[in-house]
Image 1 (cartoon, rainbow, N blue to C red):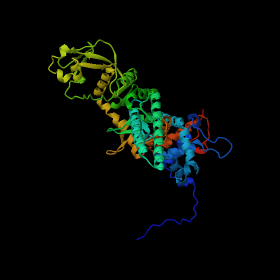
Image 2: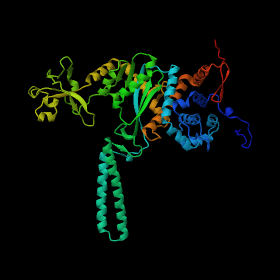
Image 3: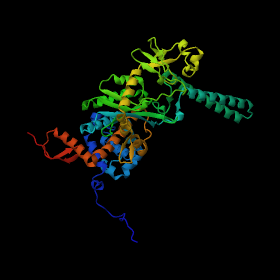
Image 4: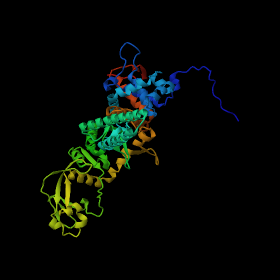
Length: 525
């Protein structure tokens, strides 16, 4: 049976880098994109600008390496350094320049704001070629692990447990020390006691720092990261990335790296989305979000903006005692400002606002609606309706109404009337259909397919910059599917052509950033 054979390794070949890269390779599109970027305007910096020593690598070279790496699941600076020495497409893209890992790493850290600006620049490019609808957006958050282990994240209770453990061990060592006879054994125990004292001082300093900051937790490796709940009582130390996705082509419109839950992110992200889509002039902006964003105060603030409509999934009411008469069984009558109980009695209020702080909840402003004990106690449902503590104090039924209850009710009504529109949320922000049975998850693409479930940098600003690069590459990948490789190349070449057209050139061969582009000759009046 014939066997295929390769060429002789000692055979000399005459090739150019241009001939080694396919004409439809995505690296050629990256190269075109790098040519439309104004690096000074976006704030990119170059190290080594002095005339002494080795010259600096240009910003477009380092950015091109990172874009190629992130698009191909290579983001470690050391792996990128090796790729620059092995990868033919990177040879072509960089002109066979091979920066070291430290140069690459510093570029990503030092240009965190510029990477944010670069994401915004590409978003504006998508807007210019009419790929953003600006009519409906969906907001969602996803947690990404930080460069900080759970062991290096502390809250007051954890610090107290550690201090109690140290005290217990100290007592054990002191008891051993009193029974020790040999000098070597005593020296070893004293050494361990000194280690405990050092650890105790460290925890006491953490406790002091935590109290001075007024925060509920502290991380020692990445000070901006926080312990955040994922699901099924699983907690991870990391960041919560708020993401806004446009409805037209499921492109990422905006993002913000936070270290908090979703509860109080709706108004800020909605307002930013409105600002970004305002010039598209498509009418009111509809914002879709899941129940994690359902907070009365946030819904109220959004309702104050006329051009904004929010559809947020209401939170299901789940009383601890399933047999009790919960708030959902009482009807609010706005005209009389009373609650009507199932038995027909009215719960009234004195009109005063009170601050109510529930367990593990932010303090809220509420009114109290009460029914007198004399009227409530005669009801046959009194035992199952009124909590045991109130019954012991001979009190009637009490209901708390939030200051923002009207906004919550209005949102619930909108969702009920526009169910089909709300169901678009999951399709916009979480998945889009690439085929009849192949849903591709947005965060799933980034976290599972690409493997970017954690951050490589420390500090919120640096993580924000890294996600600017991640989301830029995600949108870049989406345009491959929306426009096709040729369509995206044509759009980028048109941008270069328009840029040169502003210079009133009449030359068919246009030189731009040391490259030659062939365009039709411009005609001028």
